[in-house]
Amino acid sequence: MDTGHIFDGRPSEQKERRKSGYYCLRRLSFVRKAGLDRDNNTSMGGGSAWDVTAKQFEGWRLNYTPVAGDSLIRVTCGGYISSPSVWMDLAVGSKESYSIYVSGSSRSDQWSWDVPSWGAGVTERLAIQCGGGGGLDQGSEQSVSNVGFISNRLRTFMVEEWENTEPGQPAIIEWDKDNIDF
Image (cartoon, rainbow, N blue to C red):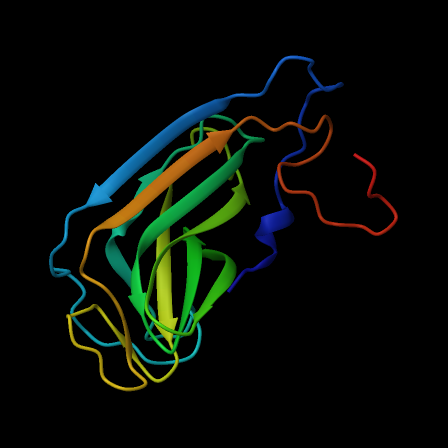
């Protein structure tokens, strides 16, 4: 899987930082009502969100077309997870961004990923993929020891696209110990 794309964003064409604020170019917010996943009723095993048994869930995916080529895309999902361990990853088309590891007891929470735009006018599938240690299924109200689930309760999914704030830099800048003054 191609994992280097998080730093492949296009640099901003701005020459200097504006004195006025920066803007959210687009914001989409969705809520999926509680109910069983109709297209994803198999258990998942494996360790990572990129294991062959990892799954995508209803309410946590959509096709998105960025407005700008140098913007920052923030994807946030919310829901309820009951698991000893779950890997969650944002897929942009066939590329992964980075995984978030959720460990411990049951929780309702929100998780966010920031990725650079993949190009103005270019549509890609955004999807949260999940894999679990010991197994993970789509969610019933019962949980078996060492098997977690993504609950079939209400799920939220939000995509925000923000203007790039740093002149001459991509939306996501690779940290460099010799360049830390902003």
